Length: 277
Image (cartoon, rainbow, N blue to C red; front, side):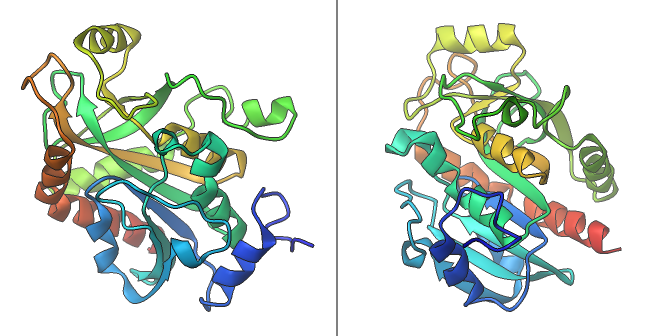
């Protein structure tokens, strides 16, 4: 029997029970770390590391730059959890399996979630190294996000963007106060794992996408369904196909992630501190 905190979440009781045996607090904020961004968890105080392979029924991550673990601790006095090791549908996971971490965080009591990712820039101002607040999203992976057989799941985000507008606006103000340049834009999700063609990027630009990547959208849909407020930040690691260099590779993604690590770490720490104020 699931307890009250996990009753509404499609997650194994054994996974929730296993994690709760390892931690002594309820995390308020969950952070999903994208490619090359695992270092952000280094800011935690009194960290408790739980390898995802030890958690019952937790799918495995196979992508370089994704460690595959949950790191619990406090940041600016607030209990948080970092998911190091995002799951992608292109690894062979179903979309339902790929959102396992989010459903687990919801079952553990997370109220807010920060999603980060590495993305290719489509808008001319989305140059490598840019931090982009995600203000809306486009699902172009043609994969349904499984949920309860009711229209309430599809309408969980409401009529507007699934990203919390007030929290995002506050984040923009915090970034400006720290002299960290950011912009805002729409993120488009493709299935991957291949990078997009030049023709696809022209189409995505016409559709209104500012950046493109292979994650995030299903996680955000599931988080919003469970009542979690979401804020999103894309690290633009490369120009999308046809807009810059001719070749793209994952090592470049990881390298740009390392280059912006200080700004992103300062920004996320300040975001959490703002909630504690």
